[in-house]
Image (cartoon, rainbow, N blue to C red; front, side, top):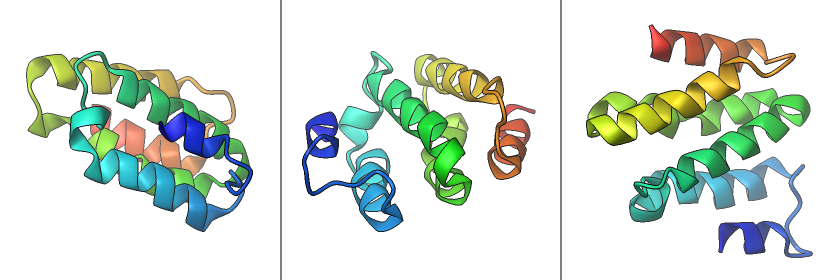
Length: 107
């Protein structure tokens, strides 16, 4: 459903308020979907962060917060969240803000 909303004509990926409202709400408040054992919520957020890293790294650094709190979850979800962070860590031209948060989380 989140992807459908992102495809809606009223949604603009480059509008930080709309992006934070949609993606941030999903990752921070729809816990059942975001933390699905399939890892689909983590992959979705990672895809958004990769795209956002190029256009608005400050917003990306705020939206990464749910992923870096992996220690609060069971081993399976921790592994999936760490994989998402590792995927982000190798993004070419990763912003300083994201790099620092990822590096600190994975230490």
